[in-house]
Length: 41
Length: 132
Image (tube, rainbow over all chains, first blue to last red; front, side, top):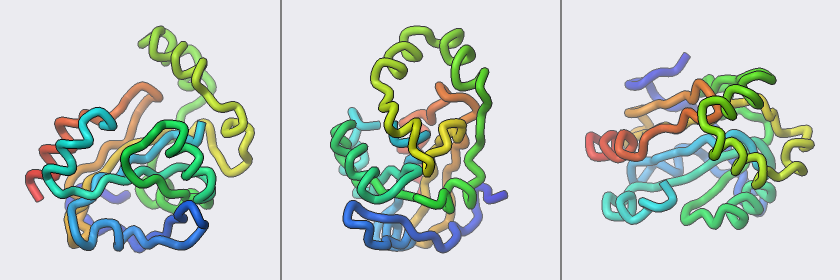
């Protein structure tokens, strides 16, 4: 199980146009705060 | 967090949300919540699985949040989008959380919610960003 101090894995998310966005691109230029919503509702 | 977005902007941090669903569903959620930051879809729940976000059960989804915080529980029920609950891509038992990663992708803060009302403190997230 991943914990603090470990590297984020390579993951891909989808933007509003269903294009693939790499998680790495979100933290490449600045620290990233990523919120996991419970569900879309 | 939404109310304190200026504090994240002051730190030049990227803020993003993800949810179980498509990118289009993420965009709809961002509009509904009037999010001031990007919202992305994770239709196969790869990120949730990789970060080991927890799950709850029927009791944890219904009676437990009502007993711990009745007002919040009723508000959540009133605002719930039943289309999302019926979405086969959405696991209603899955819990959320938050993380902070530095520019190299090293996890500096990780919160896995233990209940539906267990949300990470914004101050803790900001402190983790300050430490990067």
